[in-house]
Amino acid sequence: EESKRTVAFVEKPPKISLSPEHKYYAEVNKIVTHHLGQINENLEESWTCIAEEGELKVYKRELEEDGIVIDPLRAVHVVKGITGHEVCKYFWDIDFRMEWEATLDSSEVVEWLSEDTFVSHNVIKRVWPASQRDALFWSHIQHIGSDQDEEPDRWIVVNYSTEHELCPSSKYVRVFMNVAMVCETMIKPPADGKISRDDITCKIIYTAEVNPGGWAPASVLRAVYKREYPKFLKRFTSYVKTKTENAEILL
Ligand code: 16C
Image 1: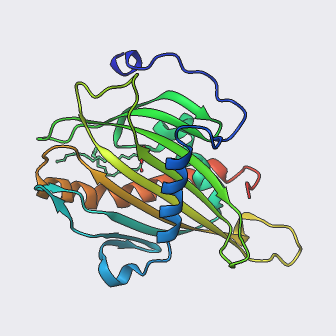
Image 2: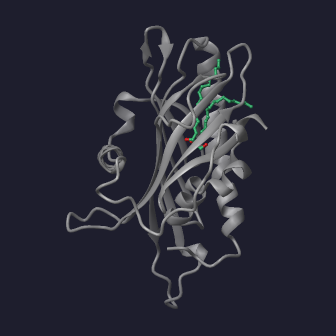
């Protein structure tokens, strides 16, 4: 299979998180900090809402660079019965990716960098009439404990484009992306002291900055985004609900 041949030997992750000496350490922390700094932004001000359905709201800002659409996208969703840890686990863990991803043909690990960070190669479904795209990015998961500034406890996953000698760009047009999923869990104190899924609500803030890497017809691209991002958020969160409904709560 084509995508398998581009992937060399994949070692098991070491039982550590990314160490300060690692070449990706500074970049991962810079991007995580960038996303955490953005989550309290008031979207009603300079963003346009392109979809609203119950608690789900999807916003965009129209942006073009050299005629290529790079509209940043932001979504907020509030989902009952699941935790931020669970949402981030299923979004990050590549073993589950193809169970909820409807826009990919394949997804393969290229290299594990540490227990919480890996690089993967992803082939995106072709959209007529554009050329087929692929994406190579690191995925990092992190728990951010609440601090003295009263910031809530959070979980974050970042998918950020990178390069890798085992996976040079070849037959597809490579897209560049900076995607983040940030989650906060709210727990209603249960009367009997035992937390059940009815007491849990998860707030999800999803951000995607994608450069389609080469020309694609703007009107088709915007129409695909408007349809696919809300679809992804609904499909993915209901997937997490199904996966966790009979499982122990992962706080
Ligand atoms: O965040 C998501 N998924 C993550 C894990 O897989 C990861 C991947 C993000 C991929 C984003 C790809 C964007 C591709 C844009 C270029 C497509 C060019 C097409 C030209 C059209 C004229 O962070 C969830 C991502 C949800 C993505 C929704 C929008 C993507 C549209 C991609 C087109 C495939 C549509 C297939 C329709 C059946």
